[in-house]
Image 1: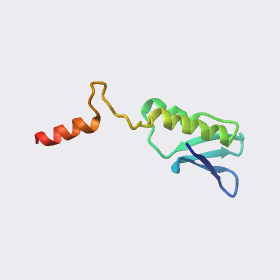
Image 2 (image 1 turned 90 degrees about the horizontal axis):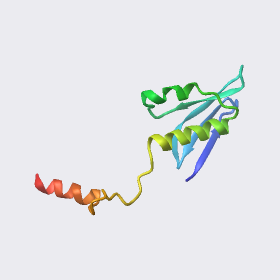
Image 3 (image 1 turned 60 degrees about the vertical axis):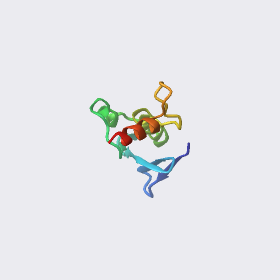
Image 4 (image 1 turned 135 degrees about the vertical axis):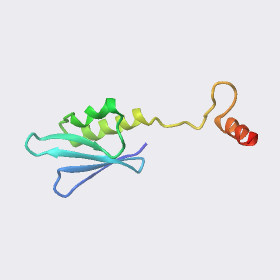
Length: 99
């Protein structure tokens, strides 16, 4: 899993990439010297408050945004078995044949 941070020329914004996917930007409030997250992905209602959290560094804010993304959109593993001995692909192909 590859994480990269691209800092702007004025050092007040940092774009966050996770596995070459753009997740959003973290921004510095120059008056408080605290960083906030601005994800490019939609946040559910329960997580909207995450935008208001303040962090001491762009790194901490970026890592928090990556953790939030991984929590909301977990990585699907190759094994997509449903626990009944059938994989998701087998179920879908059976349903398609019934049409």
